[in-house]
Image (cartoon, rainbow, N blue to C red; front, side, top):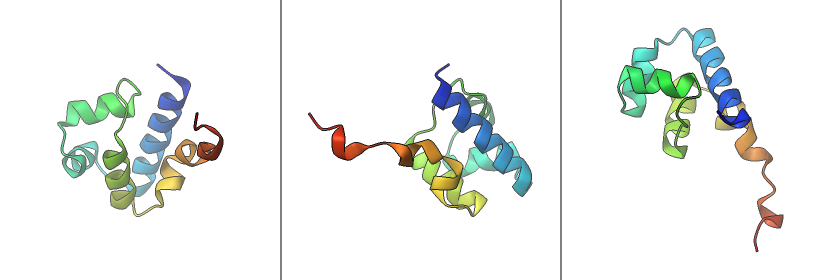
Length: 80
C-alpha cells in the first residue's frame, strides 16, 4: 500500500475514534458498505475526493486536518 494512503487511513481512523463515530455511520455518510469503508480505513482502498469531503464534514473538521497531504502538493510547479 502506498505510504500516503496508509497515512490517510490512519488519520481518518484516529479522527473517527476521537469523535466516537461508528464505522457503519461513516460508511453510510460516504455511500459505501461498512466493509468497503473499513478497507479504505485500513489503506487497502483510497478514499475519493468526494468521500474525503464527506468524511471531513461528518467529523466536523477541516478537510486539510483529516487529509493534510492533499494540501502539501505544489500544483503550480507540476504543470507540464
